[in-house]
Amino acid sequence: MNILSVDLTKNEHFIALNYENNAYCFEFQTNDWSEKIDTLHKIENFDFKKLDCSAYAAGPGSFTGARLAFTFLNTLKFVYDVEMFAFSNLAAMNWLNDDKIPLIIGNNNDFYYRENKTDFYTQDLKKVESIKNKLVMIEGSNANISPKHLIQRNQVAINIINMIASKSNSNLDSNEPNYVKSLTYRKINE
Figure 1 (cartoon, rainbow, N blue to C red):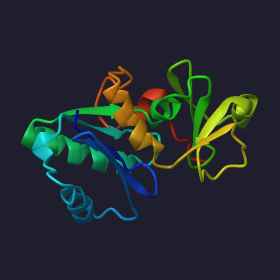
Figure 2: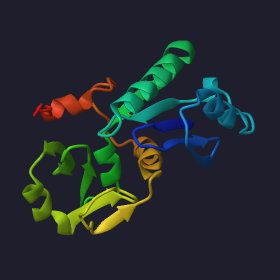
Figure 3: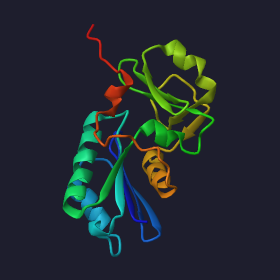
């Protein structure tokens, strides 16, 4: 199965690809789409038309990045009829880490975590500290919390491909990139 996965929710951007039984993962330091597309076209026989599906990390993380990924993959869907899915970054972090609680720390003491296959949002550091012995986080996370387990920064993009390939039904109900709002997330202007 030919699957393209895009994670633009971090400072570095990751594109993972399962194509003609080969696995690839590319890291980009900029949002230069010409560079991203040229990199994919360097793969022997690569053609967007041959993709069976595509998916992206819908957050938590950079909302602008999630919107850019959505727009790019939605264009592929429209032009090449490539089926598209959206995944929670937390669900992708939880892949093969079922016994752990994934945590993403946002700005201004925003904490996003996943427990019992449900994503949550809190600003309560005590809640996070109470689960720290079970935490899985992405390496390089700026946090004063020591997680039990770290995963590589590109792991969300890679795990999304594995979730699709295993026919996991963990994708979000909607492909819209505003899924974080469904966590009863709200900013308080102080």
